[in-house]
Image (tube, rainbow, N blue to C red; front, top):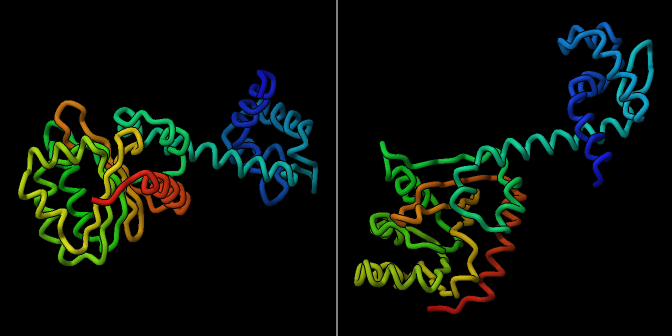
Amino acid sequence: MDESESDAAISLLRRRPVLSACSGSAVTRRQLTETTGISRATVYRATVALEERGVLERADGGYRTTARGEALLASSDHFLTAIDTVDRIVPLLELVDHPDLTRNAHLLGDAEVTVADASNPYRVVDRVTERFEETTRSRGTIASPTASEAMSRASHSLADKEHIERIFTASALETHETVSGDEFRDVITADSLSIYVADDEAVPFSFAIDDDDVTIVGHDPATGLPTVHVESDRPAARTWLEGVYEECRGKARPM
């Protein structure tokens, strides 16, 4: 997209309220002024420009969207939703700077974001544990060491699981074995749990694909604690992470 095309796209987004008001039925300029709160002069310029672009047409004494206009209106909805989604998950993007996430962040629509802070540094640990207790089947990756407290609390519900599958990075596994020792080994030998190990570079970030939705976790590089937790039930997000998981799984080896 060159500069002139970018300018045209930005102009269309600025005039989106007028385009949206003309969707479905013909609307006069006076009605547009009343419904959008835009001045008459601005409405006049907008209708002229949008008609010239072929996204509005005259009908029944007013203006309505053309098929092209409806398609562009829907596309602008997707674009604005994507911007909102990216803004919502900024805390995760600040911790997980990986191209696979930045390229697909827009798929995490309506994400629920949990962030730990000084008032409650274990807020994300609590949420991770709560979700683990609720799910029966889960596949996922552990790219960074998880808080030993979370591992200990999660172990109590392993007997109730149908199947849990986790791919550890080699460094995360080594840290867990060093820090938690026998307790960690007891957890990973549970009948419902399958553990795999992959080289660090093969696992982009920590995530899980659970019964109904998916989650991505960001870890504080200084403490190792999970401090950001993003969850989404969007099918597109699930499809994307299932693909990432299968790629990681193909590079992993069973314990």
